[in-house]
Each structure stands twice: as C-alpha cells, then as structure tokens.
Image 1 (tube, protein in one colour):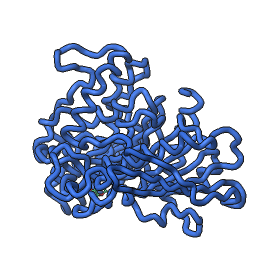
Image 2: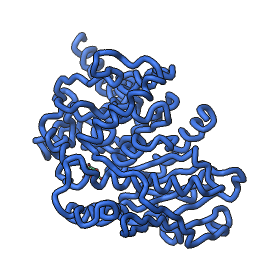
Image 3: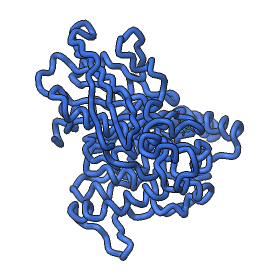
Length: 419
Ligand code: GTR
C-alpha cells in the first residue's frame, strides 16, 4: 500500500514538476540541454557546470570609494566607457567633417495611406573621402505629434526592411508598428561596415582612415560592431532634423550581432531613449564570466567585430575589467530591454537576464527597484520593472512579431511613465 502511495506521488511530481519550474521562472528544456551536451561537448549547456565567478562592482571606483549619487555616476561614467572602448569595442570617431541628409523619396500614401515613407541618404565627407548610407523610414499618418520611433540596426538582408512593402518580414513588421502609433526605421549594417572579416573596413572605417584602414590597425581601433553603432548615431542626427519624429523618444533595436551593436551604441550615445537587445548573447547582454554557450573565444572567431585587445580574454573571462552588466549600466537611467529565446541556449538566456539584474545597483541610484537574480520570468511573460524590461520567448534564435509586440508594450509604458 505504501509503495503504491509512493509511486502515485512520484508520478504526480513528474507531471507537475515542469509546471512548477515554470512558475518559479524559466528553466531550460532538459532534453535540449542533453542534446546540446552531446552535439557540442566543448561548451557549457548545463547550469550546474557554470563556474563560480565574481562580478566587478559597477559602482566601485578604483580608489575604493563607491559612487552613491546620479551626479557621481555621470561624473565617473566615462571611466567605465573607456574600459569597454579600450578592451572590447574599440574607439569610434565622432562626426565627419561634413554630414548632410538627402530625402530621396517621400510618399504620404504608403501602407494604404496609413504611413509616410521616407528614404533618406546620409552623406559624409571626411578628408576628401565620401560615404553614403540609407535610412528607410515610415511614420504613422494618424499621429499628429512628432512620433516616437523604433530604429532597427538590420543585420540581415535588406529585403527584410523593404521600403516598397512588396516583401514583408516578421523581422521588421512595419505595418504593425505603424498601427500602434510608432514610426519605424532601419539602417543596413553592411552599408556601414560589411559583415565580413576581410572587407569590414570598406565602409565608414575607410571614410575616416583611408588606406591605413587596410593595414595593421591599433588594438583599440573600432571594428564592425562600433561602426554599425556609429551609423545608428548618424541616423539619430537625421531624426533630430525631421519635425515628424520625436528624436527624444527613439528606441534602438538590434538582433544577435545587431543586439551586441545596439547595446554598445546605446552606451556611446546617450540620446537613445530606449535600447533593446534581442538575443545578443556573448559580447552583448550575456555575462561573459558564466562561459555558458558561446564563450569569448567562440565569439572572437568573428575577428572583425571586436577590438583586437578583446582576444586577450579568450579562456580568461575572469580577467575582464568589467562584465556585461556594466554595459547595461552604461544605459542607465534610460530604458533598457533585454530579450532571449528559449531554444537559443548558445546566447545564454539566463546570462542575458542576469546582466540586467546585476545592473540594478546602478539603477538604484535613481531609486528604481532592483531586479533580483531569481526574478527571471517564465516563458512568454515579460517582466517590466521600469525603466527595464525582459522576456524570454518560446522558440529559436530570431526576431519575431511576438518580440516586437513586447517591445512596443514596454515602450508604451516607458514613454507614458518616464517621459
Ligand atoms: C551566431 C554567433 C552569435 C550571434 C549570431 C548572429 O552564430 O555565434 O554571436 O551574433 O550568430 O548574429 O546571428
């Protein structure tokens, strides 16, 4: 009788355990974990295999004193920024000698008359060299005030952001965004720096460095991720000139490599009101020290993304003078949203969430409540703790209309409460 009782209880436990685990926040699908351990045994897929680590304190100054006020944060913020420039993302330049904008197409009857399409060419001239790239942009006709706007740093093909709307992609669901009263824009990362190990310098890096861009560059030189972000800042320069756009309410968004770039762009340029990282993983939102999924060595196989100095941290993550929670901190007190996907363990969803959580002491300077380590929400249940948000969506590595829906829910609240 006793054993029947036991079997019954064990059965009940097996049935409800996955649900209970979800109630206490997301847990990776154990079958997926086992599969990945088999397929790629050289990487960490299991929470229990994550090494012990200690994160640098984002508020601690080198002289052992701690930052205690927003004023002190802004006074010393540059020191953290400098460390990231020096060791990870490189130093990007400011404005070129000449910058101008050319609206090459304007159509106020786009999307069945609900939107105005603009195609803008951003022209730079520097030391006799020139560079051009295009912004595709739709503004909602139903919004009479300058519109808040989402800017995607597009790391996929330009067909995903088709201005003619003959092709429609869930990666950039422009119609839905317009319907919700937001403008939506895109730049093509490849126009700024080709996403290619050999050719990455052919865009804006060549504009600034000329032929020297081809040879050996300094180990803190800006590379592709920083170049993409430089382009996002120039797009923002244009938004500031367009009366139809509320340039103080721009949400910058990138997916994966684009998400690494959007976080860095948001750190470098404090004019972005909201910064969104979608499944940015290693070198983006994920904590490097966890070495879960993609490691620093693994992400450095893209030799054109990060500054040369970053290679010194291959297999030596614990020696980094920062971790990615400090990148999130550099966005404070502005809006920041981190998104993960359930099947995208390579990007370390928990590590992405933890960066946001460990930025809490910095957000606390403005009296924002903490996001705690064990607050990771369940699948498809966004956590919003203004001015921060997080979700983990079911499914794989992608940017989908579901993600966009959550980002817009967050922006609705952010612009209502914080502005
Ligand atoms: C992966 C890479 C990631 C991520 C992604 C992407 O293969 O390992 O770091 O950036 O590609 O951009 O799609």
